[in-house]
Length: 83
Image (cartoon, rainbow, N blue to C red; front, top):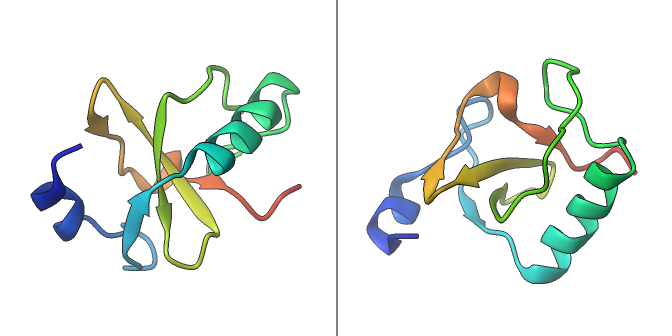
């Protein structure tokens, strides 16, 4: 992901800064996706694994990055606090 783009992106809900998810975070999130436990903010199920994700600074929300394009829609935030 382009560093300049990453520097200006923020969570559309909280305004918190976002960073690229590390491999550990991505692996844990994809485990939840595989188990059917990951949910978007609109309460729909995350039905496909993530190759990349952006995580808010407070680590409460993740946004998927599909084909290098961040999906920064409020309803597509993935709640990381649900374990």
